[in-house]
Length: 418
Image 1 (cartoon, rainbow, N blue to C red):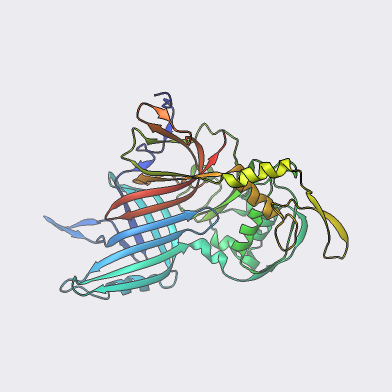
Image 2: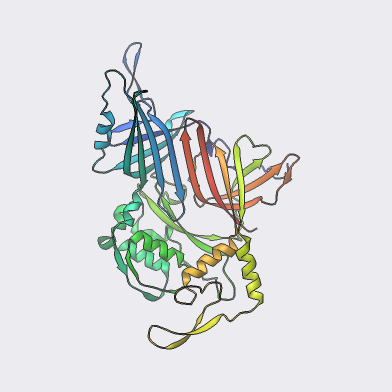
């Protein structure tokens, strides 16, 4: 078929997809999910860490802390300690740390990914007839600590949001971000926080956490290529990484620990190194579901509105009592200040330059950290005919589901123009 090339990097290959994965969970001093077999005497094998894991769900979304839900089923047999898991959770009572290690059953001694999180809650359900106790453990990224605390961030004029993010990260004694994102080195923040954004006016934020303020700043980042007459094809995205095993592009600058990135995405740039994903024929048994969601109404409204040439500038009295003329097209100025704010421009860019999103469900788990990865979809029907939804996408969210029904990865994608 024409779409298959010799140097393609398939997302369904054995190097990227694990068909028979396992997950090892470490809570305090205890580990579950794999059988650690030790020979105690000739002919006898002692299982030290039994597998109580029933299911695990992991949700990762750009700009948000990652969410984990773990279900453990503990069968209480004759002679077993019904309070065993109380001891397990108490061993992590100080740090609340939980570590998820991903492995491949075909290579049981190799873990291809590790993620660290904080336990936020544990609930238990008793089944007296079956003699089991079911524990549901909720956890979030350790980065959620950055969402605690209330601070006031003063307004500033003609400021690059990327520079402001770096200033906040460096002020560790005040905000403590370096103690949370331990994988980032202050000396090389440019590797994590991409610049090239315009100077904008930032408003005062009261009673807000450092992480929420960083999200606000990313939402105000307007590329230098953008203008009032021509929206940029670029936008910035915040991604929080729990992986303590490092990605190749950060191996020289990241130490062991969580980190976040602010990356620029261009809807027009072609990426020859993107992962390939065949949907339909001949991979219908692996790609289980595919949906496309089109948000065309905003793009149509924008083009139509530009033809009407409405009054883009309005006169208003500013906070100093001075009459001023500000840029305020009607489609982005419907707020309490009746003017176009930086975050309004970024929002409208998302709606008009990135109008198509899709969802793909894949059997098995993926080795690479896929957030902000580029994926080229080949939606093919029998006979080799391609659907128009084929093209280059970027991953904006990932959900891993592991349980007795199988192992699945669901990716949320945003279409990029080519």
